[in-house]
Image (cartoon, rainbow, N blue to C red; front, side, top):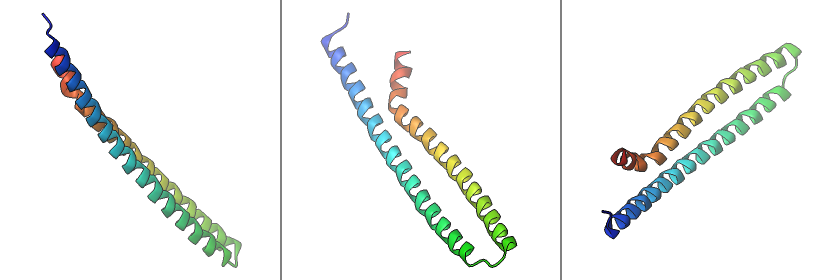
Length: 108
C-alpha cells in the first residue's frame, strides 16, 4: 500500500535531483560561454595581426605565404577548439544527468 509519505519522499527526491541538475547545467553553460568568448577574442586578435602583416608585404609570394600560414593556423585552432567544446558539451550532459542516475537505478 502506498502511503502519503511515499509521495512526499518521491517528490522531494525529484525536486532535489532537478535542482542539482539545473545547477550543473548552469555551471556547464557558463564555462562553455566563457570558452567561446575567449576563443573569439583570440581569433579576432590573430586576424588583426594577420592583416597587419599582410599590409606590409611587398611581393605576391610573401603575401601568399602569409595567407597560407594563417589559413593553416586558423584551421588547426578551429579544429582544436571544436574538439574542446565537444568534450565540454559531453561533460555538461553527464553532469546534468548525474543527479538522476541514482534515482533511475533505484527504480529499475
